[in-house]
Amino acid sequence: MAELLIIGSERSEAGIPAAMEILRRGGSALEAVERGLILCEDNLADHYVGTGGLPNARGEVELDASIMVGSSRAFGAVGAVKNFPNPISIARAVMEKLPQHALLVGQGAEDFADSVGFKRAELLTPEAKELWLQQLRDVPVQSIEGENTKAMTGDVRYRLAAIELVKKFAPHEGPWGTINIIARDRSGEIVCGVSTSGYPYKHPGRVGDSSIPGAGNYADSRYGAAACTGRGELSLRGGTARTVVENMRHGMSAEDACFEALKDARNLPDDFRAELRCLAITADGHHGGAAGMEGSTYTLMTESSTQPEFRPRKALL
Figure 1 (cartoon, rainbow, N blue to C red):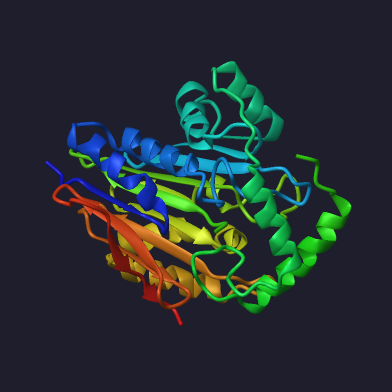
Figure 2 (cartoon, rainbow, N blue to C red; figure 1 turned 90 degrees about the vertical axis):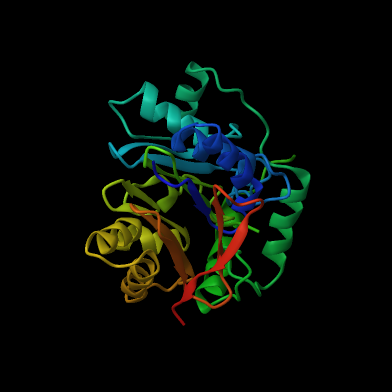
């Protein structure tokens, strides 16, 4: 039997303990990842996913999420979803109830969520709205994708471009950064899930890497699974999550596979450059992560863990 294992990005500790309990009771990695991310999405103190996520340039919260099963590479995702607090569950429903498709976006994803019984809710909380307005006023000192890293030149450039967008999309009355969780269950199945509210002040309809297989999320139980946070346009262009898994297929450790994938993405020209991070599990249960800056961690729980542990990621700079 495989050793139970869960890793996640920064702030995933809101959901990982409950996810590990599911695994300990004999539940599947799919169940564990979904439950862990639901708890992250429902965490009102987190303004980067789910309810309370920071809004787009029109002042509306749009959510992206995906889930992937390593043994079959089955994949389900939604993008630019409004008024549904748990996009990770809708993504799973796409995978299981609409297998002729893998990705639904916008109104179509919302219609599907209605049709299978998900409940609508207001996602923009007063606190998130105030944070959004404050960020428009202040020059960023942290990365536009949060994660406790310093702002880069691209973050400032992004803010200035975002203000121009906000002028076009007036908001209605009334820490951003993706979370990912990867789990391995007793059978050795590996599942990866990702959820985000995306960049604040983004153009309405923007879908990032979190909904795209091979970019922000990829799982193949023969070799492992990987997921990304940060500047999603870079991982979209670089196919970063798939690159990490391919690196592990060729024998790299999880940490080195992530590090080399970030080196590849670093070479892409990008006027809005901000930090990109990734983390991974190998098929035999080794794990690791990499980041563009020092000080980044990822979250870990094993079967013997009494609480989440925080491990350093290898820094590119």
